[in-house]
Length: 117
Image 1 (tube, rainbow, N blue to C red):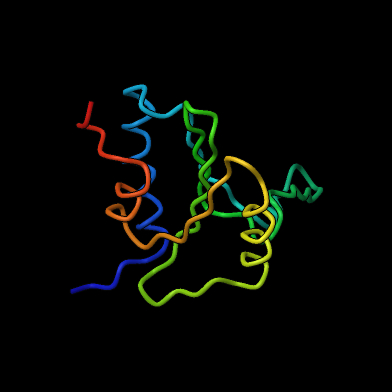
Image 2 (cartoon, rainbow, N blue to C red):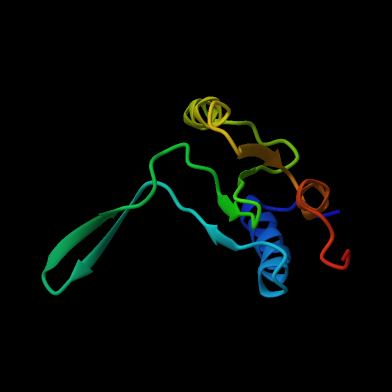
């Protein structure tokens, strides 16, 4: 079996969560990117800072007011030190929950099945 990339796992999870958002089961979902992006505009280069290093891959706002942060990893992927620091910060906030997930099935267990009323 071909090993899945983190990017393909993120895409699968986002598709599932988008179904939940579209059906009204969750309030909002988005992909977060960290780091910096540099691009050329005319003859100048511009830099845009995205989220801070360690920010999880996906944020999900629940209709209950809770926030779920999902750090996506492959089967062998490990948390970076910045990601661990982010998790420690989030664990102190009320109604914020941080999970390391490796596939859509794990997200279904956390959030629920869209076919369930």
